[in-house]
Amino acid sequence: MVVFSSPELLILNKPPGLSLATRRSAPGDVEERLRKLLASEALALGPGPLFLVHRLDVGTTGLVLVARNAATLRLLSQALSQGEIHRSYLALVWGKPRPQEGVWESGLSPDPRDRRKMRVDPAGKKAVTAYRRLAHVPPVSLLLLQPRTGRTHQIRVHLSAAGHPIVGDDLYGGPRHHGVKDPELRRLLAPSHPLLHAWRLQLPEGMTPSVVTAPLPEEFRAVLEALGLSHVVEELAAFGEESASASSAAKASHERP
Image (cartoon, rainbow, N blue to C red; front, side):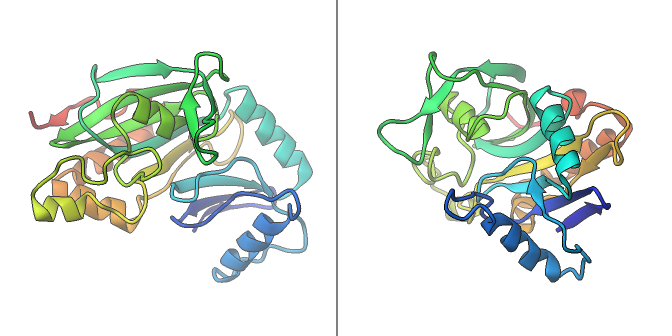
């Protein structure tokens, strides 16, 4: 789970199923949860507090920043709000988004019909998500996504509104199997959690580390291997080590009609 550790900062690779939500009545719950998890890695955390810089949904996997003091929290929170921390996600989605790359800009607001959800709303808070289609194997596509804002459920809502919900996202995904009739393919495309992974973080200039990536969780990796797409992520990771921005990653197309 620990990708990087220093006296100021922890970077974690969050597993699926771990909630990072806080309750007003018990704001220390997340810190206690994190300490219990990290104790299993024999990491000497010391007595100081742990501050979440940002959160991932319970089913989403990947990189999470945890500040180990108030000064680092302020620095990273400001950098995040000013767009100085660049986040890249990988997602397996239904269908084939067109064009191959683009930007979704739709305001978001709470869904009055379901308190668990957000919805596209022109009068809502501005939300911007850039995407690039890395590969397509019917009936799904592998996408690289870069949120430029940090709204609740932003990526999930933008994908659903575009008609390409994330595989395994029961809240925003509509029918579970999307008409797939082949039994093996139906099983493969019915994962235990949404296949959305916070894959890469580029931190502000001067910070160490400057770029961090997190390996895909086992279930996501197994699905890509079965679809013949695991090499796409490997190529993307190799390119990411050499590039300061993931936005131009994976220039080659790996698609089937």
